[in-house]
Image (cartoon, rainbow, N blue to C red):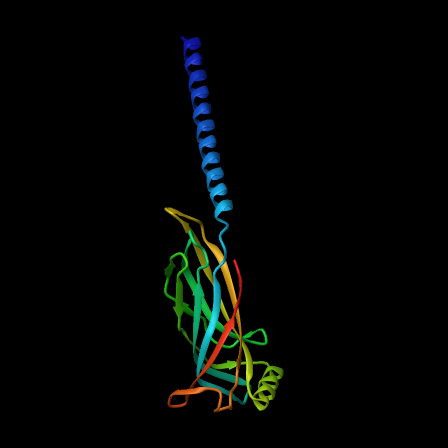
Length: 208
């Protein structure tokens, strides 16, 4: 009786082993197919352009605090012919000299089809943001020179879509340099009371 039980147990172990090997082979085949498809399609990262910035407020007060309110227009293009892009989350904010000067603004989730263009126009603002004294001195110096250099950053996650296959999330980091010619009424366009729009059309660096 015990020999018979041992025989059946041995069969079960062999069966489980075969099932495990079969599942592993199936997973490897699927992974290989996805890898081959990925290599053939060669997905390209999206391109971003900072189109314009509408400035409502840019005030440096004492003690050294900065208040900024502006709206930016960011254009993203999907250069892929067969790959769509899911933008699950994008946080947009402004930096000056490696210091964040606005709170992050979240864009709504978006799917970008092949060769499609997406446009976001988030409002960015920072109320009485403390800045280091030397940062305040640099801002004053740039203002006297006719404008300030800031960076518009977008951080988030994207997923790639190929047919019905959707990849896992990838981090995306976008940096858009911008020169805002404050104090020069001949450069910007007045759009509202105390609001001036500056056309920038500045290409951004993108890493995924």
